[in-house]
Image (cartoon, rainbow, N blue to C red; front, side):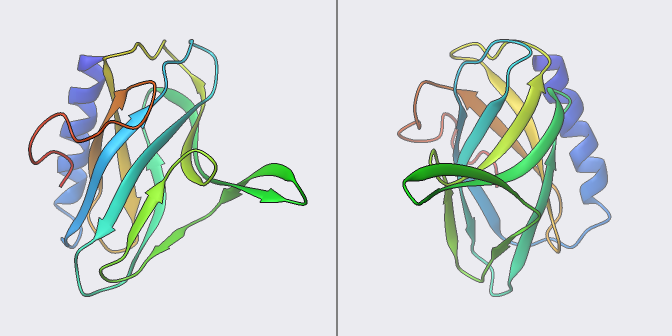
Length: 152
């Protein structure tokens, strides 16, 4: 998994040179342990510290066959999950991706997600440069980030 994460970091930094920079922060990123071949959800908190609106338009990673933005919500006492094309992120707005709400869906993961390890995920924005996120494999949302200053 570490080799895959390093490749993602190198790719994202090379892509970021072509985009405008901004002040978007992602923290408390996590996914539950999951067996290879299953689907997994990635959760995090995203904060747009800039004075300009932006949009999350997608995500990518070599750890899954398909990656989509999803939203789960209750409709008539039934939990429904739907694909979302983009998520608006207003100036100085914070959005929490959490179970029962927004999440990044990883479909058909290619290797087991092991408790205590991490995977790499690249978030794609309309205006901000691509952002590499280190996703920690945890049973629940981590209390705080594992390393100071990650995912900025």
